[in-house]
Image (cartoon, rainbow, N blue to C red; front, side, top):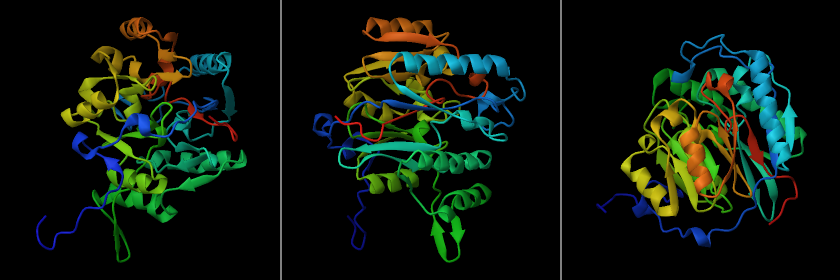
Length: 337
């Protein structure tokens, strides 16, 4: 270290394997979530373009088909014993149905379940966070935020306008975007967080999250704008198994993934980009909900001992989302190990 150079602060964000000294088996155990929040699709449609999948899709959603797909997903969660909380949508918030994006559910053995609210990069989606905050608080969950309001939505608007930095009086603040479980996920059954950054969630927000939770975060730099959230290219199936699309990550990220998972299932490009195969959802008992039209992925999962149920999400794919995006898995108030 050069003279006068400050020693870097350890924020708890792991960006490469040489920064990591974590043993997965040493991380505290966590229960599988037992609750599901879903937003009814009454007002779902493609009304703007904020990702490549939405291009040429404005006004194309078949509302009746969307309802059928949504109800089939809700029914399957209930068949598997999870409690579903169906929440009314809001007119003017068409992407609210993708309720994995606005918040991050948390659990600790001593304090139970709570939520951390996000800060959406797109101005069109920021009111979704306010609405979900009210819903979760009404259900009796403690709700937290990483940064004050002026450091979230207003600050994010300033970053969009000038590109790199926020000016608030005499204070310069880094861009703080945090798109919930779209980019930030719990390692199955362990108190360890995986995160994607680059297109929606910013690194300064992950540093704030690590400081807030005190939990290590393994961060992966996303490389393909079509795979703008971590949940489009990375799906943890159990403590030892993950499925990924390798083209979404750089060499540093792939090294981290292969270090922490015994089994890394690589999904092909077509099923990743056009079927959203990695936007699947795993629940306890080696059970997987998989977007339909993913035959190679379905066979691969079955060969590894997983029970796979395929569900159509064709209408929701028009907006760049599928099964994982359409739900928020979380914990009941008093769930325990």
